[in-house]
Image 1 (tube, rainbow, N blue to C red):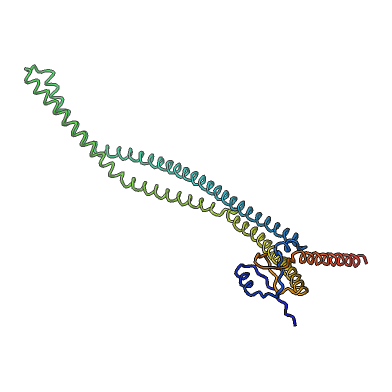
Image 2: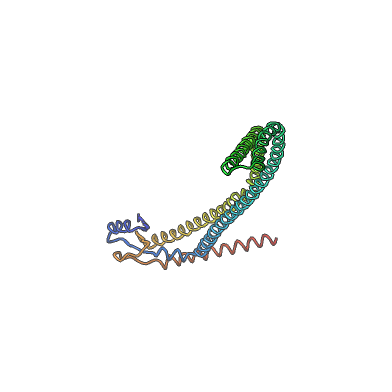
Amino acid sequence: MMRWLLIIFTGLALMLSACSKIGSGEKIAVVNWEKVLQEHPQHARLQKLKDDYGLLLDKRREQEIIGKTQMSSLAKLYQLKRNSKQNFLSADFFTRMTEKQTAEQQKLKQLSDQLADQVDKELAAEEKKLEEHYQLRLFNLRLKLDTVRMVPEDRKKVESELKAARADRDRDRMLLMQHKMGLVNQRMQPHIDAMRQRLDAYARQLQGQMMEEMKKGTDDPLLQKAPGVLKELLGTIDEELDKRQQGIETLETSIKKETESIVIKLAKERGYSIVFHKYRTNVAADDVTGDVISGLKKLGARAEAAEALNKKTAGSSTGK
């Protein structure tokens, strides 16, 4: 019983190993594997599938770039809107605070004037007493200078006394004025503290409103939906890519199996024990590339004939 053997070598190591075991009486053949695959009747279809796959893959990359660019533009636009809104709310905050401070300061001014009048009334007697005290003293000194004839030394002495009396009066007036201001400030302090508390509370209220307004803009529908839409779009394309990849792999496997079946059949018919996929200078082998290609063409012709018959049969059935 003759033992047929077909060995397909794709690596140099296996090639060298096989060469070391080849006997002198064995028939050897070689086939240009790449060439026969390209001559397979389904090779054009396979190449078309690969080209379509590449185009779809390029489209997928393009869609991803476009989608990410659009999301980036949306994010920038959204941030710009938020910044504009924040600037508007900040300006509105300062405007309202200025209006509130002006109104509060006007109230304080009115209250301060009222308290000043009240203190003036309370210290009116003391102020009158102070004026009367210095009025008589100043009057006597001025009268003395105007009516009494004095030697220069005595006149200078009286003028010094008049100047000192005026200085004393001004000092006491200043002390009385400071006392008045102290009383007004003392009585104003609770009102000033209350005003500050009202301003602080009003500022917190405005800040709270500002934060609420800013929160209203955090849920941008387009910006939130964009990643999901892009993922869904790319997922659809990925599914199609997977289907096409499976179709390519299935067709490649079918082409290789049909080609291998022809090589095996040819090897059995002609008694080849070894068939190499690549040419080697150190091995004498018959080139069966053309024969394999002829076998593939016959296989393709039979497939076309069968397809035509199926179409004819299907057409006849439809006509009935």
